[in-house]
Each structure stands twice: as C-alpha cells, then as structure tokens.
Image (cartoon, rainbow, N blue to C red; front, side, top):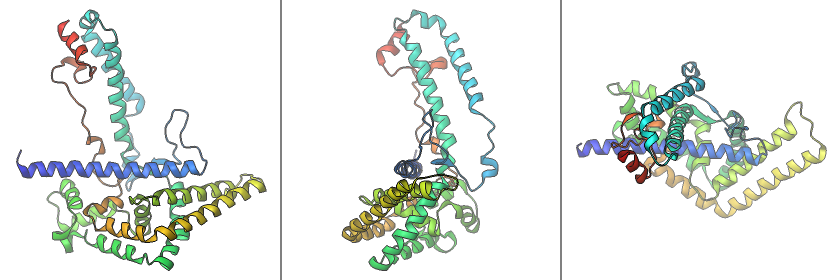
Length: 337
C-alpha cells in the first residue's frame, strides 16, 4: 500500500470515527435531557424508548422497509451455532474445559448482536420531542441573551461563512477535506453540481445547525447547562402543558419554580463565562473538523458498522474461527486435543 493509499485509508477511518462520536454525543444529550425531565428513558429490556432515540432519515420510504427481521436473524444465528457444535462435536468432547463451548456461543451471539445493533442504529437520532425542547430553549431563552448582551452574532456569521466553503462549485480548492472525502467516496465521477445536490442534506443548516453546534461543542459546562435547561423545559411541558393530564397546583408550581431557577443559574454561569464560550465556539468553527459539529449522521451514506471489523484468529479453523475464547491456553487445548 502506497503512502497516498495509507493516508486515504486513515482519513476514511477518521471520518467514520468522527461520525460515530457525533452520534454518541447526540444520544447522550437526548438521554440526559429526558432523564432530567423525569421521563422514562428505557423499556424493560433496557432499550432506549422512541421518545428518546428514534429512527429518522431524509429518505424514509426505503429505510423503513426491513427485509431481515430480528426473528429471522435469530433463526440464522441458532442454525449457525448448531452447525458449529455438530462439526466440532468430537473435538469438544476431548477438551478438558467445558466452558470453551459456552464462551464460543456467548461471544458469537455478542458479535452478531453488536453488528445487528450497529447497522440498525445508523439512521437513529434525537427524537422530535426532545429536539423541540432543545430548539425552544436555544431560540427563546439562550440565543436572544447571547445576541443582545454578548455579541454572539459573530458565531452565526462565522457559521454561515464556513457553510459557504462547502460549495464544491465555487470553492473546490478550499473545501473541507472531510467533506471532500465523503463526496469522493460516494460520488466518484459525478460533476460538481451533482455533488452539491447530493451533499445538501448532510449538514444541519440554519436554526437546526445552530442548535446542534451549541449542544455538540466541547466547551466546559456549556452542554450540561443547556441539557439542564432543555430537560426542565421538557418537564414543564409534560407536567403543565400536556393535554389530558391532571397535575395538582402544587406540582405545577414546583416544576415552574425549578424551570425559573434553572434559567437563573444559567444566567449567573454565563455572566462569568461568556468570553470563554464565545472564544471556544469561534475556535471550534476555525478547526477543519468543524463539520462534525453540524453533520447529520443519519444522512451521510457511509456505514458506521465498518469502524471496527470483527477480529479473526487465523489459527482457528471451521465455524468457530475468530470467535473462540481469547485465552491462549484454551486455544492450545483445542489444538492439542
């Protein structure tokens, strides 16, 4: 592999990792906001509820269709395990450690489960209920304060300038290397105009982009305060404004008081840290990886499941290849048997 090929491979791997990081940050934001609002986060099986983390895509017509159901995959997994046990029946009976079979079955199931979850979760994002609370606290509470008292219009102007640099037709030589890599990866041979049209939905734009920027930016304590504001607003909506739900006057009063206290705490914190936040946002937009603060990970046509391939042990043969125990002594027993 040439040095150029190595650089492209490393860049592609970095793009996938950054996409996954943006996705995990969004998931943590949604979970934190829902938890602060005192709303259920997971079901009895431990899965995130649709009101927290739900399937979203710019093209739902084909994303919603599932040819391979979870039950069908379970049947394939069971057949795979049964075939592996039958093929290695004589060998397994000679192994002194009976836990080897258990380890193989468990690890095989874990690999399948992880791969299935990674693939199915690629198009998942913050639910509209949570994002509505995020949107409202930014433009009804936070952003008017930043604009009127702290001159944060610099951030919106800088953001608009950076979005313009992604236009392939007019600024191809100065376009972001991460953005160009994604374009070349899935639109090789396409014209500049076709690439522009294809990449339009990859980024959160306008107000949505500003919301993602504020919540995703790695600025000390900013995300925590924004999540607290959004969580308390969501709690107020659930308790006080939700149609058909009864709440006592005392309960409504307590929730409103918590919401007011949260806004007061944010104001006090921001009075002391406004310069740091402004400087941090402008610095983040100056870095070349700024696009991952606004990228829509549900729209980018790259597979996050390919970030970490399944390890394979070349010394193991048969259906159990690559999924036996990591303990070298156990693998030695199999070879000695």
